[in-house]
Length: 153
Image 1: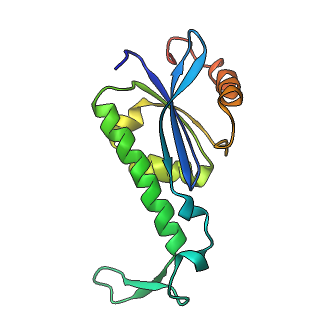
Image 2: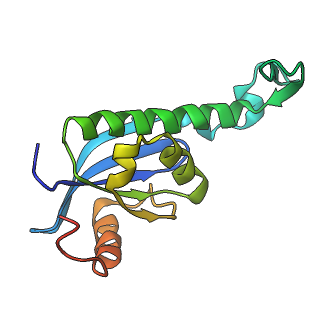
């Protein structure tokens, strides 16, 4: 547990890498990697039933088709947010930078509790999961250089 620790979360719909971001010296260190390769599959490969699954809207009596792929992505975003919510409670980080495509970032952010949301300093809407650590660090430095240097550590 480090004071003023910043975590960098890089995610897409099938993978997430969480790094500790160090400002001096400039480096990132992998904390955790979460993989859900099945989220990259096509809907037809996820759903056993070609007609899709159906669920009832609570009390309405209406049935709506459920998108299996979207359900998997939603569950993955909950898993990421749950991990971050727990580690925030353990004071493993005090600042958070989220890098993900807009849809995935929105899903993750939706599942943050109010305390974790307060620690989100930056949300970069890009798909950078395939960037190596050097490229990622360079990009984050570019974005964070415009922020107050006392905020990101």
